[in-house]
Image 1 (cartoon, rainbow, N blue to C red):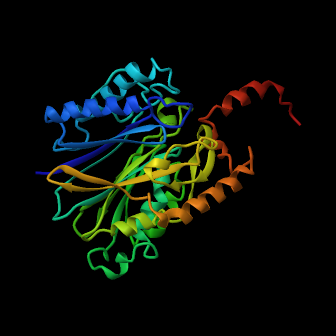
Image 2 (cartoon, one colour):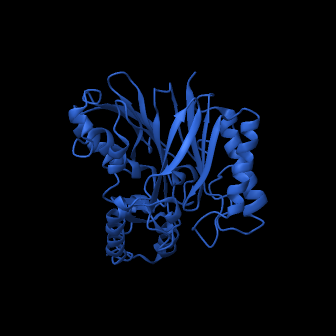
Length: 365
């Protein structure tokens, strides 16, 4: 029997701006998933949040893209919106629910989704990454480091089970098409694409030797669905570790230096992705800086054992210090690029409204 791990997230309202959900929202999510477990829809679950996003981490045996699992998540987010967020006048109530009626799959409706179906190994450690105030392309650099960079992952050199490398499935979010690239032999081609994270996003990673599913990431870009600014996409990802895959320490090492990602304030600025423990995932300064949390689980017969709050460790103190330093540096740029996103990205924000107002005042030189 295969196990499916589904991580589905949405921003359906938060307290005092884009900070964090109200406890009652999380309690209602717990109640809904507890009922689903009693009905044997779910085997196991864990509810948490990253910044202002509610995260539903669920195991079951229904496979990926199952309509009942997706409907459960949609109804959970919808009920929280109607019964908690709106009555409390929470900010951005129902923000990520772009459609009112469930159509069989929650993808394309606003919430972010990462799902993985696999045969459980003798021991199956998994890391669930959740980010706030950034986009799906934020995973490109760390996922490259985990599975293709020998300076990050020693196992690529000294572990025979990793030595053949991995295959990356890359999604072109602008044209909704994908390509599979093999590492290490196509590494330069891979970098040529994923170095443009606003367009080319890592979707899945498989081990080359046997096709073992190793990592999956959400790829939803809200602006491409709505055609306008509706908040950043706040992606999620699932990474398996150990036993012929990168060790958990190698997986986490990919976040030791905070790289710059798109998002932050109004989804319009570059800022450092800061690895934090859950207790520090609330965003504040300039609605940020962008945050990432990581919860570690063991998957055992469909049950989630854990979690361990893997970034809540002094080993990442220096990463957080550097992130704060980078945040100060980027903020000093104010409204100027490269702190502000480039024009291609800004066309999906609120800036076009300003440009439209000024259009009639331009004169030909």
